[in-house]
Length: 181
Image (tube, rainbow, N blue to C red):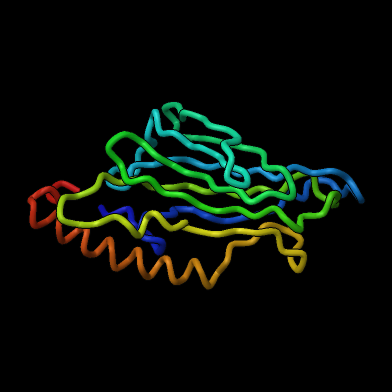
């Protein structure tokens, strides 16, 4: 079974939602990025994957994921974040999150971004330069009062990723390693 869905296994789930449990006019809130790091081929969590958070170009936080592949980070308002996902023998990926413009207070306790990332091993004869670009870009939107993915950027990346993964599968098949996937 091919586990690639519309995002072609690169971002299984990249959605943003605000946790509006209790109305808290003018209260402080958290901005949280959480998710899982998964193996593109099997869909299994990648134990030992490394997730690094950089704020404005400086290392801010790092976690080595456990067997469930899960990670979570709180982000501060007023920063540009780069979150990098890597694992031994896999192509690294990253996303960008801009918290500039997020107000000091909201009526929700938390803005959550769930980002599941699929990593895959490189295959000889196929350059992975595409993955040096962010897989997605998100920023606070006052219009929706939440974090929001850049839809135009995401659409362009999904198309580039679709083309890459078609070539990737063809290269794996040529090398005889796609059988059993």
